[in-house]
Length: 91
Image (cartoon, rainbow, N blue to C red; front, side):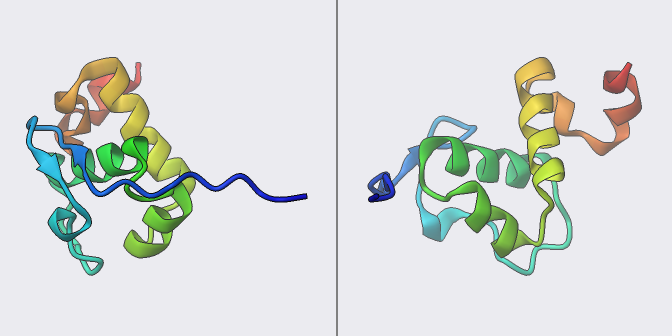
């Protein structure tokens, strides 16, 4: 049985509305996760630039951590990614 593989896209639209390519993504050794970087990784996965597994491997993230970023964006927009606001949004 052949596994269905999605073709890789060349770019996606980033959180600021501009094209985002693999070269534009944060470095794999990123230690400081600001809102923009988190949003770029989420956009890359959602758009098919990276798979969830590739993103987690590249950035040493757990699936739960990535999914929490995605849920925060969906529920609260980019402001939901602020680490200083996590407690406010978790209620």
